[in-house]
Length: 589
Image (cartoon, rainbow, N blue to C red; front, side, top):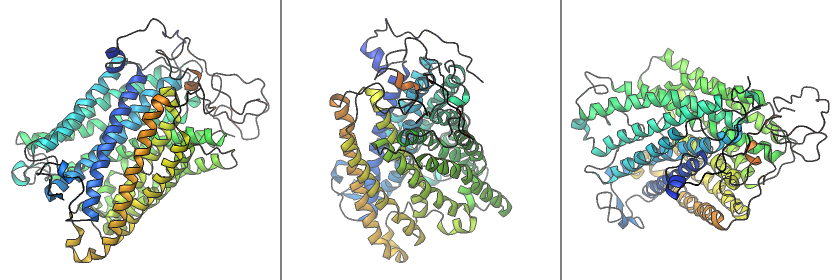
């Protein structure tokens, strides 16, 4: 079905707001996307710093940490990480990375920046609502940070906040920080719901003339489906958080033993949590699809199957939450259904991997920095997916549950997966955002060092898990059966320190390029998307006149064309006969 939006004249002139109105309280989707980018990169840095403290404690337990004096004595005393603070470390590292870094980077940044540009719209459907979604995320972040300085310390029940550990102030000493944690995520959830409502409305109602559903780039399909997941999943978490906050403050017993049901929290959290896993990976899949098609100079192999795989992943994501709870004593028959559904969800993921490989196969591959990161995403996603199949099997999960094998799996999907895609996407769309190119030499140095030390950090964790090393423990040396794991822990910690240090290259490249990078042409990657038809960076309103779409999203190496790509607003100079099995509409060849 074609868009219901008619062509409009986009207002690009006569717009001269003050600095505060333009860059602080902006309703321009592009500025809001950049605001989300800066905020989420800050939390990515903070989450990484907490990870370094965790790895120091795991690699060198009981030894004074360099720079430990910068922390309050209630957290690190004489350079030694205190056990109580260690619980807050693992809690807040996970919270920062999942809710304040990866999720806003994938959805808040690129959802805001790309959706209107890629579908030919002047802005979001609700610009003021869009501004409100960002300015709700900011106080949520401040509330989460404030928990470190309140009496009793920050939240320490893990990023999953399992009850009754997180629920009962009398039994477990729930701190004010744990309450801040709840309130912060409730506010952040409202921000996400507003943003998702905006994305869905914009994609449905504001596609330009000719932008049919199956002419949308896969990045927009992924963001659209992700927005639906956010709109359905975040209210579940928000409701559970309100119930948890009531248990902590008003004396209710939703999740307390006796009158309440502690396992209810797990069901509610993971009914949100598994769709959340795909909220954190589906946009990355879309960005990687765009980048791989561009880097291979080929149409996406099996465009329609890629769309239906995205839809299938989103649907199946709602019926697999119980695989996080195989240890909870559930009925074996119920456990079997979750095991089977979890294995089935690997099928659409495998389809996407085969389609990416099919796109690369035989292509004229250009190993730009975005393409290198996209290829790394595919490789890391395969490793993370294969380890996930092991955990889908109930008998195997009984052995590796709550060990470092789970930590390795999670990070291969959400670091090796999402973050490599984020690095690729930032580099790919950086010239459109800031009008300058990031330095490709330092981009490749950053990529290769990150790739090497990432694998040295997380791959050995599989072995740690198989040896029985539990996660979230303060000092493995206290357990005789883990005495042989100290060498691996040192290797992992040293690799993690180098991995974190390597990110300084990215930060410097990002900042220096913003001011001194090479001026970017309008279409530096010779891509086909509508965003590359605007100046770099685009003006307010994006286009003087709304573009009209004439072709599929990935028309690379088009027969009969002088250039090896056809932009979506261009018409073919001539129409050669389509090869057998080809589809101009779907962009397949």
